[in-house]
Length: 356
Image 1: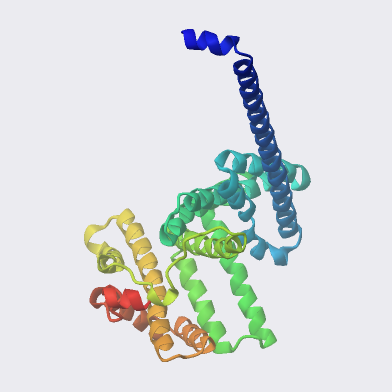
Image 2 (image 1 turned 180 degrees about the vertical axis):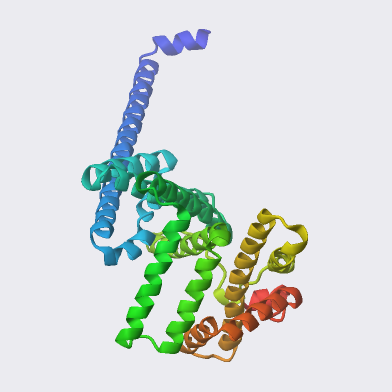
């Protein structure tokens, strides 16, 4: 008590206390200034990325040839905003760009585009910010793409009155007409055109059964492509994003082999159980399982061709031959299933993992 009074009465003590107060006020002012500068920087980057989103979306909307490319780039600004400044800033940037799109291209188109890049971009941003593994990020993104697709199909049905079945039927019909046109022009060989037309006819016949499976498969493919594009761009911007394993090392767990088997059995035993919903479930399981094991079969092919140092063009050419040849396609699917069961490539051994 006496010491505090002495310090208060001492001139040097008063000067020291005034100096400390001034230092504290200066630090608080600098802190407020830094915080204000941070807010300004976030707003500026958000406005810039929102404007970039609008430019990409409008270019893809009015230039049909760019639509396919811009679909994989559109979520990027939202992803960058979320990685750098968090979820709130990313949502604000997405909403701002969506409002501008509604004014430029119309309410329906603007809202659908906003739902596409907003939902997918926020989902990928969340997964990358949480440092998800590449495979899990793609799976989470597949769910987002599926949700966006359902929203688009629902809006199409409500506005145009076109059901998803009719929508896909018209799309495949247009593809079949395009194949006939390419055959007449000599761009596609007649045998290949007939094979593609037969595949389209089979798809039309089984369309009502495999819509859910087709939706999930397409969502996974779109999610994978979006993730790969986002990762390649984000690496150049200085962000660390986990990669998807190399294609030549893709391998499903052994228990997934039973997915297409159960699907085929469910469809083949329809005469015994007589349940339509079991046929639908079985058809989708068979479709998804065969598609995945086809991809894994191509991965097996790539693994051995890389081992013998074959050029990439040979791998692509052999993959195209397999996909367009029915017998080789089925052989590739079965080879992939046996690879999951027996691990021909020894990918599950620690030595092979270190080599890869």
